[in-house]
Each structure stands twice: as structure tokens, then as C-alpha cells.
Length: 221
Length: 234
Image (cartoon, rainbow over all chains, first blue to last red; front, side, top):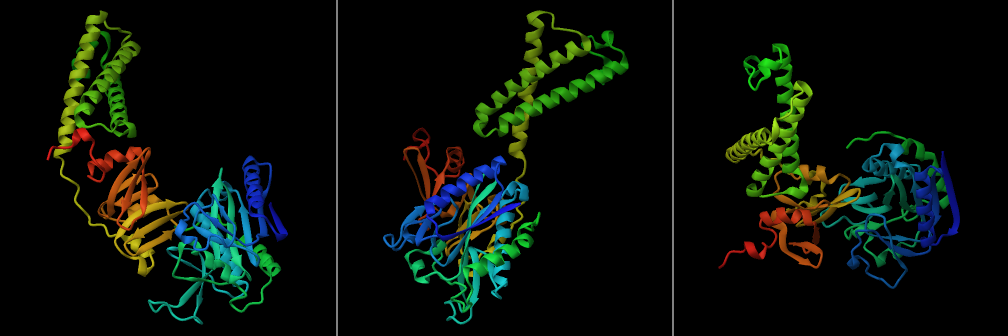
């Protein structure tokens, strides 16, 4: 049984991290159920364990938090749904790569609820959408923008941190960092794609698609 | 043969069937003890020794282990203990001599074994990289649960294990610098150690940490400065 929590308003990042770590420990100890937590943060940047200082191009713009999750710099802010995923990976196959693929599938299935085709790209973490309406890239390929980010950490085989999906954030806020260290591609949101989706719509879609995406017990390499 | 001929008083003490069991037990137990001891001393990561200290060390350990096994086997099956220190020393000396010969011959045989035929395995990991990042492979680094593949054309994160990434790198000559980092031999620009921190700087400017246990291999490969005592005069 999963405890689904949705917090209204803007949640302080440090408080959210403290809650996650406490809850992850409790899940590992068997004293709390698995938890999925929907939040929104005030504008901030987080630096994952692989973040490079040069990728923080505007360090004075928003608070910068050092995070224990994997990955590089990420922006969180109003209009972006952050989904903290505190699940027992040991009971879900004990395969962290399979678990990440499941999370990617969950995001893609959720976007599909709004007729958005999210795709995984080798070499680029996150979920991407093609932008045929934008100029082609220098290599004459269709432009692609990132719509969802992913970054987890495990403690005693319980995951925390999770994913974020851009519903309607101020996309200019991403200009202060090189998101995930990727310079050659842009960032988009559901509203930027022309879809009048609300946070509530997204939350319902996430809950609808969760079971099919996350209850698999095996995955191909 | 030994079961039939019955040397070392076994002809007097045991019947033919018992001698067969005794000899079989001796063979299996001494071989098992020898394999375990030499395997441990050869492959233990903290005992990476050059041949000169390794051969006598393994020989002695092997000889003592075999002596112990033989003594225990004699005690259990024959109810027989060595008659005083003289016999014990003789038995130990014989075991040490035989184990030294076996270990030395094994080492020489391994040196003269032909190198396995190269299969020229392709670096299929490039199939996973975006086209614009497919340059010369510089390094593979774990950023759990991903592996960062750095090439001369940039870097890309792939959701895979480091062991799989190394396998898919094919015949690209490389060395493990750390349990989470593998570097291509041709990619190392410099090596330095500051205090307890050892790093390899690659041609693209990235720095990869070096663990203490990997320094020996890097030094052997010529990618890490030799100890002052190993440097030859110009």
C-alpha cells in the first residue's frame, strides 16, 4: 500500500529533504509505508553529486542546495511538479537500473495521457519531447527539449528524491544553470507545448499510470 | 598404484579397499588445500606480489598446508602420528620441496603459455552514444545508476553498469583507476598525488580519482610515476 501525499503551496527544500530521509529510513525499517509525495518548491537550484561549478552560470539568482541525489544541476520552482519517490527497491526487484527505467516509463505514460510523446535518449538523462516547431539543430536533426528530470538516491534499498515534470514553470529560470550538464538542448513544459494542463490534472494522470509502469518485476537490459 | 603397492606402512595397516579410500582421500584433501592456499595468495587484492616473493611464499604456505592435511588424514584414517620431531621435520621438508618444485614449474609454464588469440572485439558501446558524441573513448565513470561515457567529442550518461560498459568498450586499451572509474591508456595526460588524493588528468581536462589499490597496476602500465628507487639513472 502506497501512501500518496500532495502538499499544497511551496515546500521548503531543506524540510522536504529531511522528511524524505526520515521516511526512507522508516520504510527500510518497516515502520512506514512506501510513499509518493507531490510537492512544489520555491525557485531554487540543486546540485547533484556530479554537478560541475561551471554549469551554475548565475549563482546569485536563486538559492543553491547541495543534494545527495545523483546527477548535476537541476532547477525546481513554482509550476513544476516534483514527485518524491520513496519506494522499496528491494521489494521491486533489487535492480536500480530497472527501477529507473520504470520511473522513465511512468513519466512517459503520464505524458501520453495528454497526447505528449515523451522519449528516452541515450546519453541524456530525463524525458524529452521533439520540437518540430523549432529550428533544426546544427546536425539537421529535429530539436528536442527536456520536459522531465530524474534523479534518485538509495538508502538501504529505499529510494528517495525522484522526478520532476514541467507543467507551467517560468522557463527563463532554467537559464541560471546548464540543466543536467546538457548545453545543446532546451527545456519545455506542458503549457509551453500548448496544453492547458493543471497541476491537479497531472497528479491524477500520475496516479492513474503508476501501477502499470511501476509494478513490473523484470525489465530488459 | 600407491594403493596397490602400499608404501609407508599402509600395506601392513590397511586392506586393499581401505588403501584405495585412504589414497583417494589424501589426493582430494591435499589438492583441495593446495588449490585453496595458492588461490588465496595469488588472487587476494592485498597480496599482489612480484614473482620472486610470491613463489617462495606460496611454496611454503602450500607445503605447510599439505603437511597439516596429511598429518590429520593419517591421524583420522590410520590412527598414526609422526614418531617424534625427526619424522615431522622430514615430512614437512619433503612437502616443502615438492610444493616448491610444483609452484616453480607452474610459474614457468604460465610464463611460456601463448597469449590468448586477440578477437579484436569492437567497441559496441558507441551504439549507445548519440552520434555527435562518438569520438575516441577517454573514460567510463560511474554516476549511479548511470555510467558517464567521456569521449573526445563530449560525454553522455548511459543507464548501465560499469562492468557492462567495460565489456562493451571492447578492445579499447584501458585500466581501472578506481572501482568507479576506468580510463583509456591513451587518454591520460598527467598523474599526480597531493596528500592522500591521487588523480589522473585526462586529455579533455577531466580529473579521475585513483584508488591506492589501482596505483600498482597504473605504475606497471607506465601511467603512474615510478617509485624513486625504481627510477633508472639517465
